[in-house]
Amino acid sequence: MDVARELEALELRYFSMSEEEREAFLRRLKELLAREERVVFAYVHGSFVSGRPFRDVDVAVWVEDPENSFYYAVELAAKLSTSLGLPIDLHVLNNVPPLQIPRLRPWASPLLTR
Image (cartoon, rainbow, N blue to C red; front, side, top):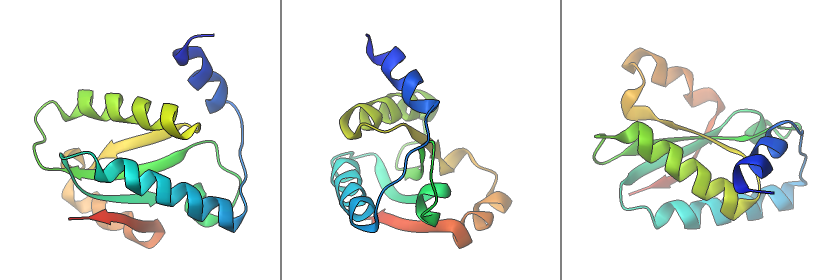
């Protein structure tokens, strides 16, 4: 099975983790994001943060150079999904209208800041 089919199969499932597993997952995610020079800060949000079962892990990043950020986001999401074994739904905050960003904060958990 190729990577695209594996990721597609993962997106149709619901996952659950213990608190310890979530913490270990977040540590690994932070390590991987720290290697990305373009990422200035990152938040994790969505159902993963809530502790409920989840289909993917929602990650929002602010990148230093937003040029071609769509392609960067697709590439980074695929790389993270493959490395971590869970689907990652990645959004570049540089592209989000400023008035929508505060709506993330109540449900977002800071993951990385530089």
